[in-house]
Amino acid sequence: MTTYLYAGAAVILALLAGAVTVQTSRLSACKAEFESFKLKAKTLGEKAERDAKDKEAADLLKKRTADNENAKTRAADAATIKRLRDASSAGRGLSAPATSAASPERSCFDHAKFSAALRRLDEGILGIVETGSKAVTDLDTAKRWANP
Image: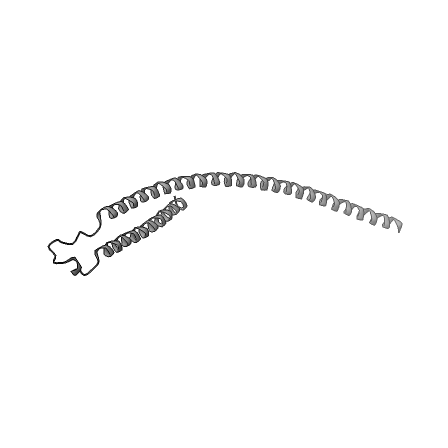
């Protein structure tokens, strides 16, 4: 009877030893797989960081280029608007009442007030043009920067 007991214990020990061997090899395989995963993750992370830095540098270059173009366009627009303001203040106005008119008081309007109103209208229109021009320039620059 003790022989069977010893034989049973030997079988159980052999099975346990086999199980430990199998589990040890599985553990080694899992450790190797985990090390491989860590290496791949590190490599991918480093590549992603390099790509992000490259993209950031490219975006910064695009932004600087767009800002320079925007500044040039705004300067050209400002010069055009200044030229328009100068032209409207110098040349636009009412002519003096005709000397052949019986009396300047017979006009339907006050010459000075009407001229001042026209100047204010011109300034208001040019202000709207200036604001719109800046907005259009900024929007065009943003579109070119975003979609090269």
